[in-house]
Length: 307
Ligand code: ATP
Ligand code: RIB
Image (tube, rainbow, N blue to C red; front, side):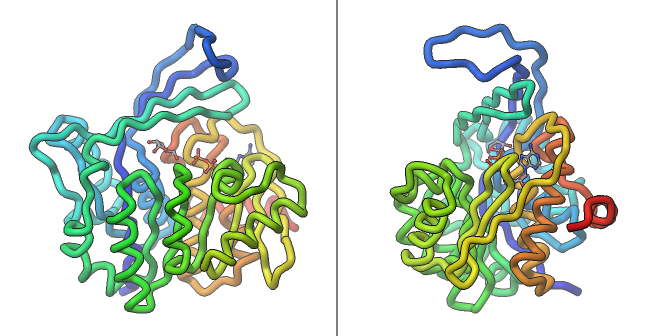
């Protein structure tokens, strides 16, 4: 039996509103079509890892509302273990308000609810899972002290750690000595480092700053421009696969889930990034944040899109 991937993170109820184009400040728009889904970067990444056939355990919290029950059912249907997801009596489940434009781009505002109550004590309660894990994956939609505790336990036991610093919080820089891989998107990289654009020189500088802060590997996702990593101090860009994007919400989550799956499998970083890019490309063609493909779909896609 494989060791599980443990995802420590958020669980949200997503309200997705389709708009023609994303609004400018002070603009009022008429949306067309409201969809709802179970989401949260933590849950989406856990579901993505599970879709690649790995055992996955989630550590997090939901409220005692109907949505929390729905989220627990969703985790079970996705094959994600939820024994360490706490239901809080006096709290609402996290919510995300998401605008999705016709070009697939999005804007997200999260109301954390129960996610804001995930504590180091919850992580300690899950330490048995973490010490026996193949990898621990974290994002920043739960409080930083809980994230730190999960990374500390993982590092002490030699467990692979993947830090997706989303949403960006500069305090995460202090946690990077505990990160095997850090995976910001372009805005997060700009927020965490001093870079002002996405030129090769700036990406090299930004990713270099994350490595200087302590991360062993640094990868940036660049939406439809693909992703990039610093490998032996050289910038390696992996272009995105050409697809018609319907909804890029959660593309980063699918990317992270696929990346950790490949890293756990022992694949080298460039190959793992290509696989993660293919998985994410498939996901953006689907209208859901929780749209990770199966390994068979990714293999078939890669066969149709050779290097
Ligand atoms: P989210 O926060 O919605 O999960 P993100 O901003 O973290 O997303 P992105 O950088 O937008 O993540 O996308 C992650 C990866 O998904 C990219 O590196 C790329 O490989 C793939 N991707 C995103 N958008 C597209 C697109 N339009 N076409 C093809 N691939 C895409
Ligand atoms: O990455 C997409 C996710 O971000 C959504 O599911 C939403 O809940 C927010 O956490």
